Structures are given as C-alpha cells and as structure tokens.
Image 1 (cartoon, rainbow, N blue to C red):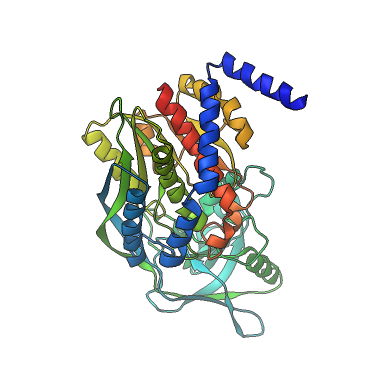
Image 2: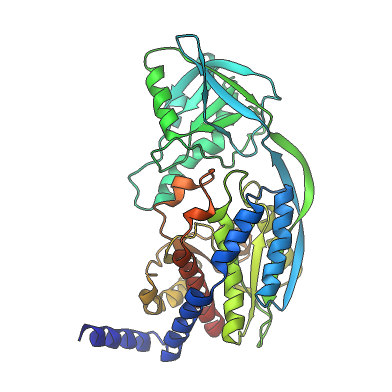
Length: 452
C-alpha cells in the first residue's frame, strides 16, 4: 500500500509540474547505466594512482592533460581539444618548522606552507611566537608587539555549522590574509591553524594572497593537534619558532584546459559540465577534484551509451589552475565571450565525490523555480536540497556573463577532514557515492537540454 501511495503522489507531482513518465524512466535508465557500467571509479584510480597530485605547472599536470583528452575521446566526444591558458607556477621545495621550548631543545612540527607563499630562501628565520584567537584580537595588538615576532592565528574551524562549507568560509580569511596581516605590523612569518574539521594532526595547505602594499613573508599551516599543543605551551612559557622553506613563485607558463563535447542536434548552444584537473601537491587530488573530472566525463559517456539525442551541445570542461589562480576558468569565459558562444547553463562538481544531496542554483528566480519543480524526479536518488545559491569557482566567469550556473552538492561532513591534505587519496572515495553524483548531474543536464 505504501508503495502504491508513494507512486501515486510522485505521478501527481510530476503532472502538476509538467514532468512526464518518460522523464522518470530516463532518470532510471541514466542511474542504472552509471551504477552498473560507469567508468568514473576506475578512471579516478588511473588518475590518482598513475599520475597522482597535479599542481599547475608540474609535469604531473601535463600528464593529466594528455590523460583527460584520451578519456574524453574514449567517452565518445565528437570533438576534443586543448584550450591554451597561461598559468602561475608555484613550487614547494623542502620545508621545516621547529619550535624551542624552555628546555632549550628544538622540536619539529608537521606543517605545510600555504599555496603561493614565498619561503625563506632556504635560510632559517626565527622569532618568538605570539598567539591570537581571532582577527579582532590581532587588530588590537600594537605594531611594536608584533615586530620581529611569529604570529600564530589559532582560529578553529567551527563545528557548529551543519553545512561544513559555512565553517570553511568562516575560517578561510585566516588562510588567505595571515601573511599580509603579519607583515603589516612587522612580523617575520605567520602560522595558521589548518582549515580542518578533523580532530587529527594533518596540516592542510590551500591558497593565500598577498596585499601589494606589504612585504611578502611566509605563511604555514599546522594541524589541529599541534595547534592545541602549541596553545597549551604558550600559556606557560615563551616559544621560539624557526622556519626554513624553499617555496615560491616561478615564471608563468603555457598550459591547457581540456575540453570535449557532443554536438547538439538542434543547435550548438552550449551546456557545460566541469571540474578542475589540477590539485594541490599533496595527497592524490582524489576528492578535490579528481571526482569532478571523472563525473563530468561520465556525463558525456552516458549520453552516448544510452543514445540520448541532445538538442544542444553538451561540453565537458577539465579546467586548469583552479587551486592557485583560476586561470583556466577565466580563460574559458573570455574565449566563450570572444567567440560569441551562447551558453545555456553550466554546472561544476568541486565539492568532493561523496553521496549527492542537492544542487545549488545561482540564477534568476524563473530558472531556479523551474529546476526546483523537477525535484520529485530527483527524490528517489537521494537528491533533495535545491536551496543553495552558490556555484563553482571555475564557472563564475560564465555566471558574470549572465549564464545560469550551478554546483553539485554532495554530503559534506567528511570533506574538510581531508581537503588539501596528504589524506585526499583514492581510498577515501566510495564507488557508489561517486557514480550517484555523476548520475545526478547527467539527469539534470538531460532535463536542461530537453526543456531550455
């Protein structure tokens, strides 16, 4: 009886919102095909285990470009090409952070320099650590108390937010701004508590920026356990820190985003699905963003395999340089504008390969309400949250051009345990969760292509 009632309600809902039984059947075909025959999981293993992490400008990134182009061809793309883009190049090199306590002995700490940080040129830079728990606390410190010191920004990732991306957004300003804030008052380098939801000692890297008005000094991150230990030590004694690092920016270089498409049968207006091919230089770049890459390729493969005759051109874009420059996304938007290409819609997967829970919609209310009216079709696949209003970093240039944009919303509870760390490996990805995300994006693009 419950099954009959549920089916009746679904059919009534679809009738109200103009959805057809055909759509429900097609959703089922898409999901069944991907869960049974999807190649995303095995392709992710190839990408992460055979190539590994893929920092922009590295040899491994260039190998990933070749790999992605071949996978798009294998998926049945009618056309595959490389889009030239000039990218910034940052290299980490050797690095170490030590502290000296009242016993006079040096102790090494697990750490990672923040992405795009300048280093110490291979020389030791040391000073007394002062700790602050917030921006407000730091702002109250006079410059003479900061001069020649090392500032430890010990701001914890908030556990209060159910949506962990809110906790990440709340803490991100410390990673982005710590170096220049420290430099402004004459400090020697900055240490931040990692943007991590985990209770472990794994440091998280990630992008930072320099204010052009102040000297470029290093910034490094430490894990939560080390941060707690350092805080406790500072309550009872003076601590000296010593940093030696070789990281820094190199000359920009020519690289590529990778693009494949299935040409539209009705017109060549473009629907984009994408992720970013680069990653930070630790771990394997599995959830961030290998999963988004293989999910995007899976969309094209599924359309081809099921023989879905797409009205509009469906284009998968493997963006270059999202992590430390967004140059691939910017170049894609510029090229689309220069070529006067009409884009109908763009969706990005860059929030991990965990089970899909929703789709965040950054568009006008008319388009948003139309997509939300399709929600009953998604409910059987665990996709129910259409309330978000943010879309991905690489597609913001398209959004700025007036294109409706969206982002896949996976379950986020584990993402910031491993984000930008050595722990972001293939083993952390579940096959079914990954492929369900690919199915949700394919289902949405099927509806967009049919109705827009």
